[in-house]
Amino acid sequence: MRPRRGMHIYVLPNLLTTANMFFGFFAIIYSINGNFIWAAYAIVAAAIFDLLDGRVARLTRSTSKFGAEYDSLCDLVSFGMAPSLLLFLWALEPFGRLGWLASFFFVACGALRLARFNVQVSVIEKGYFQGLPIPMAAGIVASSVLAFHELEIDASRNYGLLAMTFLLGFVMVSNFRYRSFKDVDLRQRLPFTYLVLGVFLFAVIAMRPEVMLFVLFMSYAVLGAIVGFLRLGKEPKRPLFMPPELSTADGSLEEDDLHEEIDEDEELEKRGENEK
Image 1 (tube, rainbow, N blue to C red):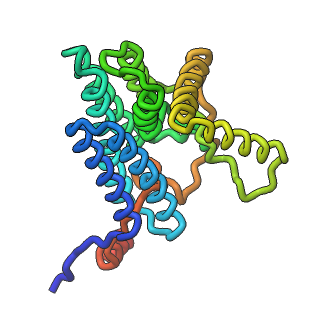
Image 2: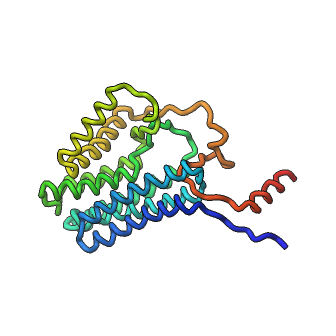
């Protein structure tokens, strides 16, 4: 009899990805209930688990295509739907149709950003993102809620937040290059200045965390957009060749955030067909 086909997945990284989606859903519920501060903290928690699942998958060598797709779906909930709904109910609802269209623009651009990342064939520089990452855009939204609450500023019908919503959507789908810092290896010896800058950064954030995090995140988005406008039309550098272990059959890249294992019977059967 023909052996039953099945798919085995790695549990640990996918549980971390599920925790990411849980906190995104948590943020949606608390936004609807009007508890915007808890919703903002939930988005921050979702970002932490989004960072952990990829790291754990790489450390445990449990990467796969299933995990990449699942991670993108969870990111759309946690960093697309949750912050857009938070923005609308917290600040943009008084704008009426313009307010919910701005929120829709944010979530739509986030979905396009994730789709482009998943199907991107060309190899971009390791140290840069193409467009603002959607977790960073969601982090800006969450930190803005905390900053406005700390400064006791009324966010309702705030034109600055309306403009910020459109700006974040635009830079997510843009070709602006944002530094990812993935090429910085902290395990190697670095100049003493790096440590001094790290201590200074901690001190600045510690003065007023809610406000300073918003300033830092927003500065990252704005500076990336400014650099992108200055370098408009300039092609990013690309590697001269693609390592064989990173390429797939259709020429696309196999992403890092992957957590799936194909059943051994199915793999053996494919190898037999290829040999024939």
